[in-house]
Length: 118
Image (cartoon, rainbow, N blue to C red):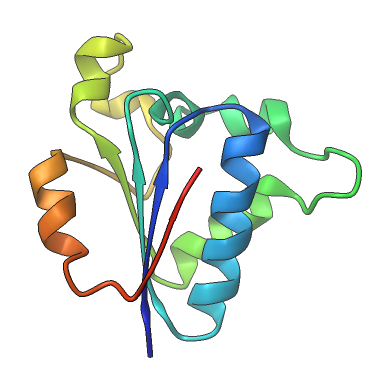
């Protein structure tokens, strides 16, 4: 079993889809998956935002990908700096999101063998 760490640096579909497609494949294969959304990526995790970008031609349903990743046990983190930087509150985020600092993320992924950044 591998450990995959993915950092998401933007909240547009080209940033979000690869994160959840790769995370879904890895977690379904039994790998540990840790996703970290920087302040620029965190707005995509706000309730209702993924609904605006799902059903793009040729791409899987984003909500189904997200739900599957959560149900299979991937850890999804939003950077705590996003709260002030993007005027967000913890309750603005979808279920399954934990707010952490970058130091906690770094400690969480020290043993990751696969890393991606989008």
